[in-house]
Image 1 (cartoon, helix red, strand yellow):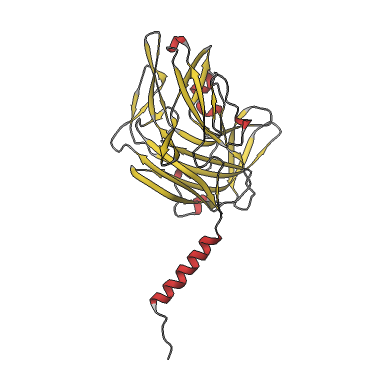
Image 2: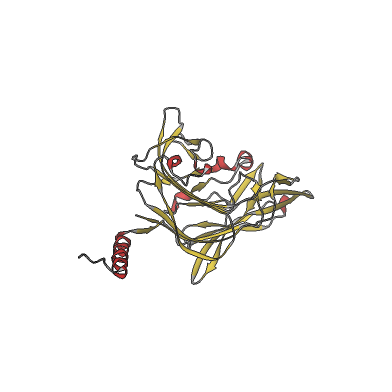
Length: 321
């Protein structure tokens, strides 16, 4: 007569297998992914706008820059850009802050906030909505008039990357306004209310890119991980894990419409030095990645549209293999 194994014995076997798999997993921080090191930039605005000095922050080596000059993204190995902007239009210089470091224990985390910013020029209040965003890539500054109108044209999105991680891991918390209307403010005197609601967003794309003879950039989508933060989370959600799904994301039961292939959402600098759209043409699970796009934002809407007061904090950004 055969005897069934006790339930506790089966449980011990499962636990042992789980621990063995966990022990084999490798965790790697992205450079500066612990959010404890920041470069501080002091930008003095033009007298026309009041002549105030604003502080812009970059997730990078600990340093201080006291001049109104472009940020040297190639000066260290930081992969991070932010939505903090320094603009110079017709000789008028302006700074906008939506990303800041914030104390967390003995170190820091990154605070991303959606704000309705007001600029007073010649007695006229101009309003623009800025969504706090942290991303792999570079915000090319100072922004010109074209960049102020279409911010994505100034963001060189993505960094060189050839690995195949299994998951994105991070700590986060959030304030997501449940009953507040969205607004659209593009830098004029007008603020328009928009129907719908805004949510925080985490998105990771692994791409295999190439460039044609005319400088157009195309890409296969190799891997995808994403999440919308739909409600406030008052306590830190540590070691949050987003599995990276390889290949055609539309075949997965948990596919969401915002994970579709992108044609004009992200831009990058081509070999000729020109900013062009990264056009995803298909999914290809077995392609070797060439670039990593990772973006964490306090909102998921288009530029200048969102919910003021939405905040996402993030920390300890790493990849599992």
